[in-house]
Image (cartoon, rainbow, N blue to C red; front, top):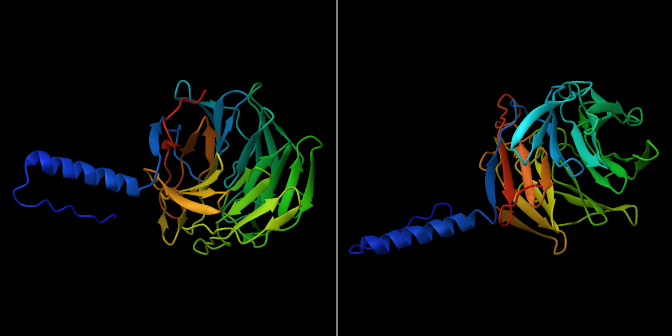
Length: 328
């Protein structure tokens, strides 16, 4: 319906024509999918291949990566940014999660497409200090993988090691400060994001090393059985470098790159019905992003506006599936 053309019959009154135009506008907007995007304050500077995480403990967001040691915090109550303690190394393709009042930055790449690092940086937002945790097992360092937390553990799937996508799946126990190997993913992939919903870790889409070698495969690791579930409904739009967010029973796949372009596409996977739906697209297409969720809002900042590199942005936009709500 993107190419819909409204033909107004001759003799139609101005009022009637205006009503027809208004109705067609509503129809067209409905074709873009449910939800809406709201602009928020941009970050301090433009970058891509970043991590972005919300900490309920301090009610702030934290941004890092993009070949920089700079770490920034975003206060949603005042819609303002400030610089906080830097990370020890300048990395990109680094992933982060918030857990037990801390922000964990896992792995990353020193340069493109390697070498990779297995470092674990732990940021304490209360004391504004960075410490280190147990690094990934030797020989399993990587960046651009899928990372998510479940309980007191952080799971890392896939990623780039030695410039090549790997199927590895490892878990970091934040209590014992130890790493353990888990069953490999069914296929190697990188440039995707991990998502935990219920008792499953979802690995959706991404690519196998090459920028256009994208996949639509949707797999899930079942924490109860300790095994991978295959054959889930595939991602409708093949892409890598996207963000993911969990809203209710859905995993949202946001933006990305592939096929010579960047994507604004947002698609939601309903984990209960094993089906996909199209949601309102991002106003600005980009990749190299991570999404952070607060009070029903999905916050996305920075990212690359051109496939590959060379065109980063500082823009921040927030998606709401319903009425926009403030982040407490």
